[in-house]
Image (cartoon, rainbow, N blue to C red; front, side):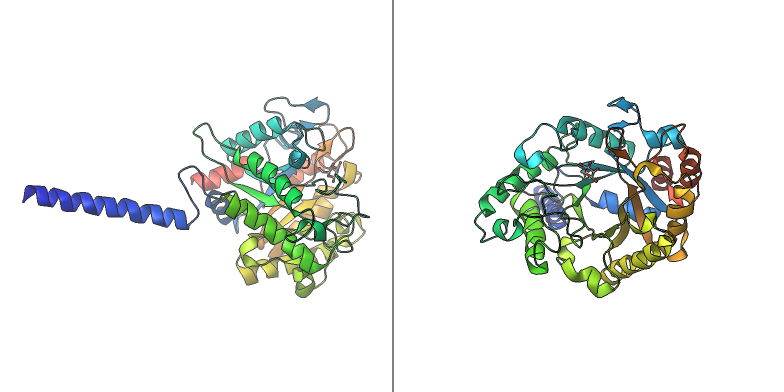
Amino acid sequence: MMNNLKNIRFNIFKALIFLGSVFFMSCGITKNMISSRTIENKLNVAKDKGILFGHQDDLAYGMGWKYVDGESDVKRVAGDYPAVFGWELGGIELAHTFNLDTVPFKNIKTLSLKAYAMGGINTYSWHPFSAIDGASSWDKDVDVVKHIIPGGLHHEAFKNHLDKLADFLKSLKTANGKQIPFIFRPWHEMDGAWFWWGSKQCTPAEFKTLFKFTIDYLRKSKGIRNMLVAYSPDGGFNSLAKYFTWYPGDKYVDIMGMDNYGDLRTDNGEIAAIKKLHIVIEAAKTKSKYAALTETGLENVTDSKWFTQKLGVVLQDPLVAKELSYVMVWRSDEKVHFFFPYPGHPAAEDAKEFLNKPGILLLSDINKLINK
Ligand code: BMA
């Protein structure tokens, strides 16, 4: 009798373990991954509280410094780190040691893990070289997309590029061997015509095939599950239908994005930017996704009031303030260009004032909300 009871208990226990694993596997979570829901959790918690602020390459370099532990131009100016950390993976597909902006991939890895450990969200852009002949992403005269999608002559070479990308993404593991969650934002600004995947370089159908194949390959063939995906046209749209022209489908996208530099450097451009963000927000609402201004900035911050008077005005629009999850400004490379000021720069005080607004969330703000 006692033995039977023990057996029953043991079997129930085994069944629970089995059901638990089936549940977690079906959610795409395995023991070795930290679910992408940890990012969604942050985005959900931030909802209605404010917009998370991000900066590309923030922990890697800034004005007058490079790879200094703990350094960040956002922190130097505003006293806190950004909540979103952007990184660039162009060059990983060729097994380069450095990305196309000379940032070593080993530093990107260490700093991504640091950002994750601090409570931040990592997002990766990718400006890959062509799998056909190594042409740069900006080589708009080459015919790439139709040759690298399934059925194309260079499809295998492209898969090889994705293998290298996947190896890097899967190597983003904590000391306990768990893969960290991240946002991936491939094939961005496709509505423009400056990349080989742009609107004049391939058809929307070819583009969608490229996008879908990329995500399916990373998820299904490579087992990457801890990834949210952002879809980011460049603001070359004026309707919901136009916004969706290159949309690969609901199962491929988690974040409805927009990159937009143009409207934010134009007189009265904030009106156009707000209109487009309303379209992005409508898209996100219709599809139950998040909305984000995935890239913006004013090159070399030549307007000392740009943060409060341009970006700030756009983000203060009531619908935008309520619905937008995050905004990210581009990198600050002293040799090329910078999009966030440094201490002493004429725009530094204004950037600080903007970041101190209650509706803009930095790293300690999101950590406080999460730990509440
Ligand atoms: C662009 C510029 C380039 C850089 C590229 C990828 O906007 O910043 O200098 O190589 O992004 O990071």
